[in-house]
Amino acid sequence: MQPFSYAKVTSKEVAIATVEQDKTAAFIAGGTDLLGLMKDGVQTANILIDINGLPLADIQFQPDGIRIGAISRMSDVAFHPQIQELYPVISQALLQSASPQLRNMATVGGNLLQRVRCGYFRDPVFPCNKHTPGIGCSAITGYNRMHAIFGASEHCIAVHPSDLAVALTALDTVICIQGIEKNRRISIHDFYLLPGETPQKETILQPGELIVAIEVANSAYKSHYLKVRDRASYEFALVSVAVTLDIEQNIIKSARIALGGVAPKPWRAWEAEELLKGKVINEAIFTVAAEAAVKEAKPQTHNEFKIELVKRALVRALSVVAEKL
Image (cartoon, rainbow, N blue to C red):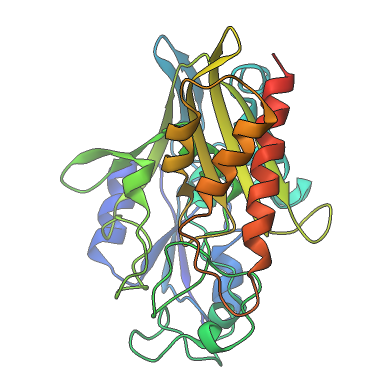
């Protein structure tokens, strides 16, 4: 592991200015992903700026929704009584992430920024366009069972690993960012980038910019998060589904569906959502929506099974929400 310096700060402005001016610096809070990447030689930082002392760990319920500070611990958010009641999809996604020990340490902001879990990316021995643009993607011709069926490119087929990001995508979350010159409020749909020809760029964050909070609007939606994985705990998703439904007298007024484990960013099933709107709740319409959700899928050599898995998981998640009524 490359040697590095460490500095603890108590000012957002100082932290942001330091990382903006020194391109070898990086923010650290929980460090549960960053330190692993540094140990593996995949990511380097000459100086780590500890932001745990910043006032970014509050959970505020406001008239128009909820604001969660970026260094709120995953476990604190997952077990918050009002979040469990009003936004169960958030709590469910967090409780199916990592392990209890990691959730006690890891932060909301860090979870959204965790790097892909592609084995070829995590091992610097293999050619990877995220390490060195233009060198090639080992996963395309290698073992790609865990990889993308949506949104990939000839330069990268890795999937985004965050469960929380999938849930927040289904809630149309806004990400609050502070930079050296201005603050920004960005829809989560625009925050993540598809690989295209620049797979090394995963988000719209500029050097020195810091996620300070996430904001979720009030809604009357019922929600559920379903995760399908190879083992029951401490495992990344083969496929996951976050569903929210606004239902009145057994009619779906609107739906939001986000898929995880299938794309380089949380994947919104816009066509399936539109198809459900105005329909009576029943398994038949859920099945039709599931078919629409996978219509544009382009599987890799070893992951065609994900298409059927997405369909079954989506029907199940929609049925669970319907059963709550």
